[in-house]
Image 1 (cartoon, rainbow, N blue to C red):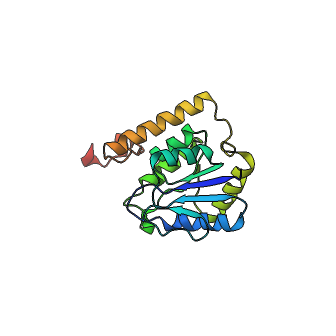
Image 2 (tube, rainbow, N blue to C red):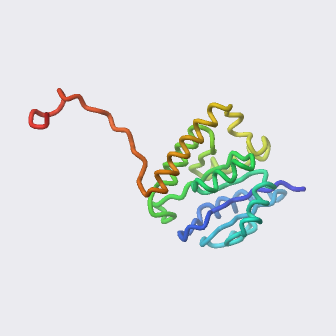
Length: 188
């Protein structure tokens, strides 16, 4: 059986052509590997195999079969990939490119990337390199073993971010405190 690289753009109505183009670029370099893209509202890939949407049971089977999982920055998709033993390559949607309404996927990918839940990918060169490395090292290869404590911390961070997203609030960004002495006289 040949290796499979699976990319999941999610179900958001905003197109995500960047992910499709990156998968096509990787597929053109590796004709020996099957590349499948669930592309949503983006144009279908030219080189990789494309599906606008996949039934949940088909998607689950492909995630289990995949050598590499690539996904947008949606927490649910990330956790599905993790549950199947993958450290997904995460390409969060960018609102500046019309891929989403705000930058919550980028913020989330940064947080979970820092603790090794995903491999946060920000450019085509890094994407191509990470696809190759993951094909060589296996589904969890790039992040290595996080260890039990680090996994628990990562899951706790992800759970807090999910709770905030579900509540419709952006995550709280800690701000440096100013001492009362530093405040102008009228603000004390």
